[in-house]
Length: 327
Image (cartoon, rainbow, N blue to C red; front, side, top):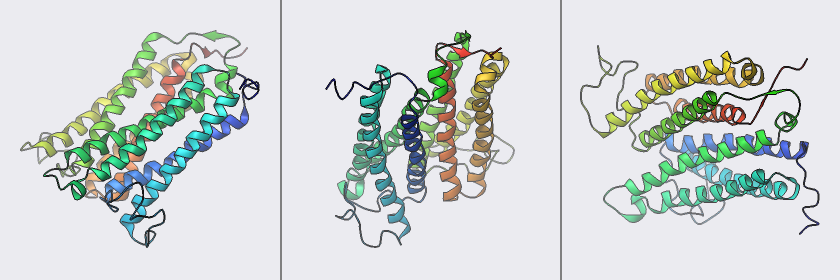
């Protein structure tokens, strides 16, 4: 055991960082496949799990859109599972920092849980249970969607933690990050996560067009003319977008106003601003195109990127120090 871990170090390791980047890149097609599967209502293209029609390579799955979306999502999930195991092994063997090793363990557990949740969404669907409603399966689907954001966040933390800039920032002239900035970062990240949760509920309830106009809910009013669950969850998603925008603008303005954070995090700040405006436009475009599946899926994907970028800024700001300009 000691021989296996004798090469552990807290120094920058290019191969570890490269592997983290590789794993992080793979989650993008997985998120797209999952989002597109929901957008075209293909989650039950196969009634069984973990196999698809009793096979790892079901017949005609590449030529039927619903099977292609769902089976691609399953295969990509398997790849992320293997990558998380590889990352755990590499970090356990080479990484001296205990928090990195612990985070890699959590990643594997969450990825396994994600697979179970995805399977439960299929197994407990009314097509299999013959229940009077589909609330159980929809609940598993919503948790599964949120779990994907947790996996993304862990990968972001591992990637940043293994980067040269993170490791080498431990020395040199430093300045602490104000506690108010850290709190605004946490609040903004939570706000986006809750907005994604509401969006997941809305998508599973097929309420994306419960309010069919934008920016008005009906002619001459921002409020709907009637209320039911679908209208309420859709309206909550619109209100959530306003709340998230306000939180992010305040957080980003505070980061920009601080000379240390502005210099150290300028790329992330500008990225979040760009993603925010793109996300708002995509939300409107989803309504204007009558929920085009590609537009709706890209809206879902950019929302994940927005959460990841905001979490990345928050994670970096919570580091004990931020570099000062070198003299």
